[in-house]
Length: 220
Ligand code: C5J
Image (cartoon, rainbow, N blue to C red):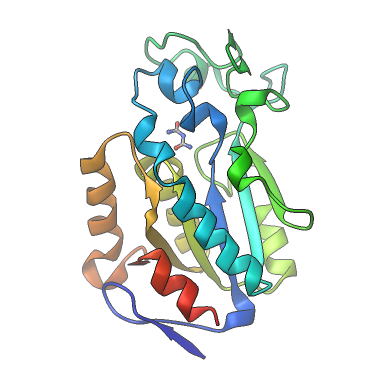
């Protein structure tokens, strides 16, 4: 049993039962011309965490542990994109429209790919998800059960949308969840801070948080 120095208190875990879930570090959210930018967001904030996410991934790779990468994207015919999602708001480009990185949030398009610095290695799991949560309409539950995983470390973007949704889904499914504080980011810094506060409040009601350096140190 290992003990990770986390908030609001120590996070105990068995090394062979922990996995990393990196949420949606895709060009569509992190680079200009993608989905995030089409909604009027400044993507530079998200670009800044790429080296930290890489350190976290490298720590899990060095320890030989399970790594899951997710991508929010839809089938080319958009049959898995509810009209309520596509028609929401007034973005410059809608899901499925052509932009500088191909069709917005469509699988197989350049914008849907994970940024090159964080590209999955062979053997790492890649989940294409049509929703904000990583468990909705994906094989993630089964893949984690097959590997006897009980503890999940979350990273990626954006903190209050896909990361928080996935972490709450995991918490409800019985996983012990920890969010890497400096390996997640939002277009809205105050939303990120609110999520960190919310998840660890009330005795870790959704989970724990810790900085990447402490997580990586605890893996060895
Ligand atoms: C959003 C995500 N923000 N990956 N997706 O729409 O958080």
